Length: 259
Image (cartoon, rainbow, N blue to C red; front, side, top):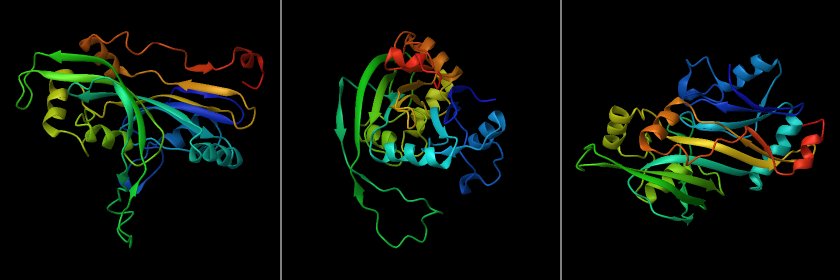
């Protein structure tokens, strides 16, 4: 059973667990447990994807209950009308916040894009980020005598493949658990000493306009056990507030029966 964050007659949003594929993929042909089919079986309706989260990323995943609504939501994503908020744990000590405008060369899949004839090109990529908290732990990892970590909040304005991971690498503060772009020794150390044995990237909130009712919605996803244990170990319990799963931007909207 997946945690349903929001559901009405047009939409359903779930808290996607880390390690789950959104749908069946050539990435793992033998994987039988995927989000789409699980949600379909859970609510007894077909669901339609409108965006995706990488397999190791947890958090808010929005789906439509018809192809028409899926198209409307996809348009909001394409026109950058969806506001996405992520939290991550980074290696090292990242200070302050800024808007990072750093183009990314398109990443091609070894299998899906093996017959591509054009060279990948750099695409615009923009991310807002803000450091929320820091910690230095008395554990020697790699060549350092202590282990430093930063809790960061990020809001991507574009949707490039692995954008948040690659942007943090550009800042020289990779996300802990990033096996594709991160620091292998730091990842192993964080897993061994603090139980951070996966990608520490969570899609915390998704803000958008309901495609049918026009109501402004903010859907939030809570943190799982790995995140909660990490917050306790690092003394960050109050850095990510415990908020309702669904928050309406306008109080009066809550009185409408469709929500």
